[in-house]
Image (cartoon, rainbow, N blue to C red):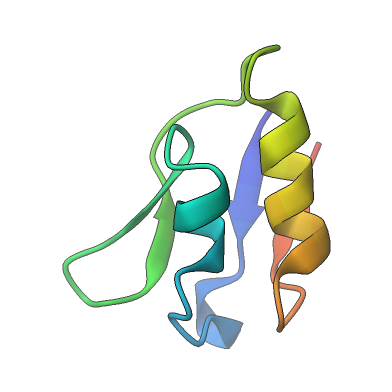
Length: 61
């Protein structure tokens, strides 16, 4: 599985990095980025990050 962030809509709240730091991190420009594929171990927390993103810019497929 993969996660994608529409960085144009990211407000850098950091929720995704708090919920699933194994997949998401804050990039040098201050916005969230995906840096790892979703594994079976991180599938639930990555989906939680996508569901709770305040701007709904994270998709998980």
